[in-house]
Image 1: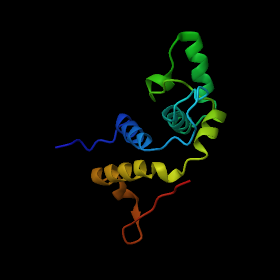
Image 2: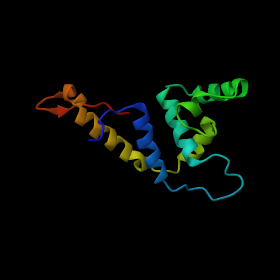
Image 3: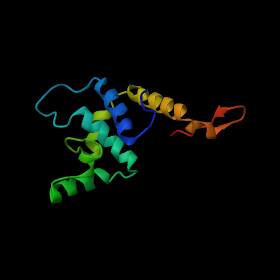
Length: 129
């Protein structure tokens, strides 16, 4: 029986699987320094850590210590800047990643975590931004 635990690693797995399905809108060239995967994971890491300067700090850690959390926690190969992430991800529809939300929702529902948020005739109340 598969585990229903929603861990950070599982969340990253869902995200990685969805990233693999996104077509990179850029033209192939030698100027394509960062992978789409690094851009999506970099954007996710900045939101997850709730700090736009998170990636700058990771770049500093990498130069000083030869390692950083962006690589060890989020699996980035290279660390793009926030501006590079924006430029790469702006042309991609947000719907490309809706599957992650659906998988997370399913796991939370299976675990019964969402039950305590049901109100008004068992409607699920969720604030999204």
